[in-house]
Amino acid sequence: MASTRVESVDFFYVAMPHIEDIGDGSQDACVVRVAAGGQVGWGECEAAPLPSIAAFVCPMSHSACHPVSASVLGEPLETPDDIRRISAKVRARSADSLQASHTLSGIDMALWDLLGRLRDEPAWKLLGYAKAYPKLPYASVLFGDSPEETLGKATAIRTKGFRAAKFGWGPFGTKDAKYDSDHLVAAREGLGADARLLVDAGTVWVDDVERAKKSLPALEAVKATWLEEPFISSALGSYGALAKVSGKVRLAGGEGAHDWHVARNMIDYGGIGFVQIDAGRIGGLTDAKRVADYAQAKGVTFVNHSFQSQLALCGSMQPFAGIEKDEICEYPIEARDVAYAITVERLDRGADGFVRLPEKPGLGMTVDPARFKPYLLDVEIKIGGRMLYRTPRV
Image (tube, rainbow, N blue to C red; front, side, top):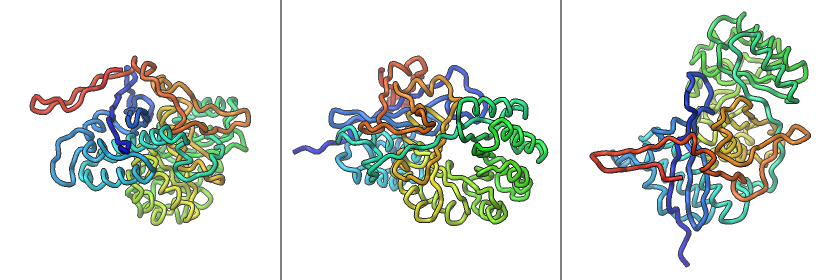
């Protein structure tokens, strides 16, 4: 009997008509469709779409710089181990193509979705979980341009019934400690005393521990649960030094991890208490699940990272779906229209305020290309007059 093999991989570059220079990853998306055995699966890369597509088709430069397509197309797809094997093959053969991790992430997510549809099982079950536990969403927003705007956002979040919220990027960390404190006080006032307050510095201090330390008194005063990404992911020494003096404010990080080794090093040497993994960047569900398992062994809380579409959100929640104690999940509430045009369904909160993953096969989300067609950008990649890639017709 012939085995099921990966027949095709297609990419769709969708974007808002105007892209703003702000920390909002929902303004465009690189959506991936994989076909095999009469079914299709969908995924999404957390990356600039065009270089991600290019990494799939780029000519071989040398033995460690193959196009990602060479390790995916025609490969058997019948068990979870097949996806793990494909992932390892891409890592080995495209090691020097740094965009390959982003490209692989969307493909890997689509492969788990596809295999779930072929086997009539949810992706989280294929990953080894017996049950998907409800997650408490934290409203994820950018800081306002002023403390007054931050207060308005926080008040609106409380009005909507969220019990946790994260404020990030914007002007935070760009001025002085007093200015940051004003934003934090505004966020706490708007949310109320009991809501969880999470803070994302957006790597603003790069690796400067002394500057980051100045934020700690204000963070402690507003009872912030964590300080996320004070530094870039590779600044492990800075993370470790700040973690030793951060007190009750634990450090969070990991969204910049492009493989499980980076995330593991942040846990082992960076002293983070929360590891935040973006399945659209780390290599898909395969590496994200590996981090989730490792975090459990190390007593670190796993949190999904997702500031994109509903498809990406659903994918990001699969790797820790079955971990009951790791209950909070990122939930963007300021996403752009294109982020809601990719899937028919939305992961809405239930009456109890929790978000639940679908019990349906794969990711459990329906992607309808006709919905995102108004945002679709045509892509053609030619080398020497030879067409390497063209956006498929919707």
